[in-house]
Structure formats: structure tokens, C-alpha cells
Image 1: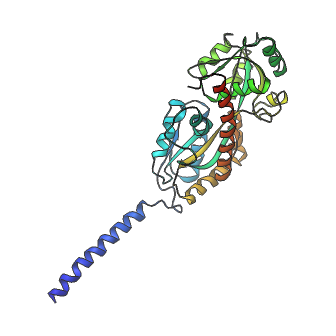
Image 2: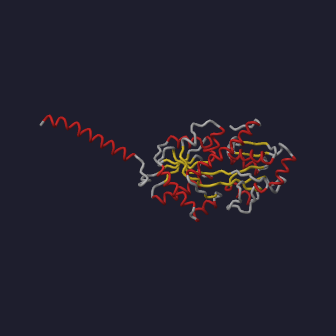
Image 3: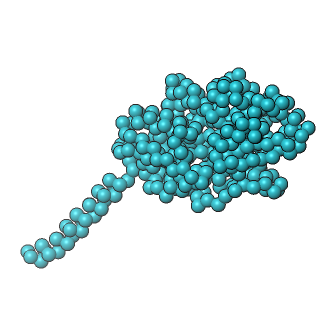
Length: 333
């Protein structure tokens, strides 16, 4: 009898240990049915108060209301969004860390500087969040009241007009370069350390023109401190329908910033799809959509596959612009 006991006890202990391991593994495994069961960290790769933060706050508030779990914003500004994206890539792929990403962080940065992540390999697209049109604006003393006149002025005075940006390789720098190549003009790019000082110098008349987001530009235009000549989207923006598109003068011109919700690679597809469904629902809600429009953004949901295709298309387009900048000796960093 004692021999039987001695034989069985190790087996019982072994089965108990295996059961505990299985239970622990089950508890750690993300479950789409109960997701989210705790607060979610949403990385915002910029400082509070900017366009990315404004849209991320609106999305996080709506998700909190829908799910009853707090969406905690984690602002990780720096290096044009690289710091925030590197943090997201290293996070556990369980759906409890997401990033409200940007066009710069996903497709521009990997083209202009060395980054430790591959956005197509190390991140899992969930959905587009918004398209953010940019306005081309000038100082009121610039003798151009529309895009056609600005282009004619630049052609008459090559390299005498300045185009400001938030820095070498930033989206509004690339927008300026796209304008130069499509219009066949030569203007001087002047990089700043951020959009704010660049805008200040346009208002002061030190810089002739710039491209920047609607929330930053429209109030200055309404105050008569600057003149807006065009919007960068293919169609007029619902936030400012009175402003013509740049494409009306330069067919095919389109330069927009866009934001998207992304997860670390390996996040279970069921969780990605659950989050995607919520984004689609909120973007289709008229009051929520109008809230984004009032902030200068255009609500835009997508499937994960559509977002991946959008990323690749944007990456290919900017790769061509960046190649042209390098060929002309321009700086990107």
C-alpha cells in the first residue's frame, strides 16, 4: 500500500503543477470576449495640445464611455514621434497598449532617418482615425491672393520666396517640396524647431508662406494676420469649405497628415477587430464626426487591410519626394 502511495504522490503533484501553469497561462492570454478587462494605455507620440492629442482625446473619451474602462493617454513626445513608436513596438501584444500614430511616425520617419522599427513588420494596423488637411498661408504683404498668383510670383522671383517648416524631414517640409516639384518653382526651405516659431515668423513677415494644420492657421486668418490660399486635400475641407483646394491649380496635388490607431505586432486579430469595430462606429456617429470636423480633422475609419494599403501608398509617394530632395542636396535631418 505504501508503495502505491509513493508512486501516486509525485504524479498528483505533477498534475497539480501543470494545472497551475495552465491556469496562469490562461489568465495571461488576451481574451477578446472579455476585452478590455482593465485600463488601456494609449501612447500619443506628441506633446499635449496639438492636433494628434486633440483627436486622441476625443477617441479615448468615446472608448472609455463604450467600454467602461479608462483609456489612459501616455504622451511620449520627441524625435518626431520615434520615441513613442519605439515604446509601442516593445509593449506586450495584448491589446492593453495602443498608439495613436501619425503619418510621420509610420511612413515618413523610416524614410528620412534610422529607426529601430519596421512599421509594416513590428506594428499591427487597426484603423485610420482622421485625415488632417493642411492650409497653405502667406503673410498679407505677399502680392498673391490665390495659388495661381503665388506660383507666378515664385517663377518670377526664383529662390526669393521662403517656405517654412517644423524642421527638415517633417511632413510640412515634404509638403513644401511636393509643391515645388509639381509647380516647377524654386523657393528656399527654412526649417524651424517646431511649427509654432515658424508660424510666428510668417505672421511677422519674415517668411512668405507655409503649410500647417487648420486649428493652428484658421484663427490667425480670421484675425487678418495671415492669408490662406488653399487647402491641401483633394477636396475642400468641411471645416473650411470656403477655401479652394491647391489641386484646383495643381491637379493631383494632395498632402495631408493623418492619424491612425495601431497595436504592437502579434496582438490577437480578434482584439484588433474589436477595436476596429468601435472606431468605425464612432466615426459614423454624426455628433462625434462633427466634433472632429470642428477641430479641423476629417473623420476617417478603415479596415486594418485598408490602413496597411494606405501606409504603403503614402510611403511610396514620399519616398519619391525624399529622393528628389536628396538629389538636389537638400537636408532631411
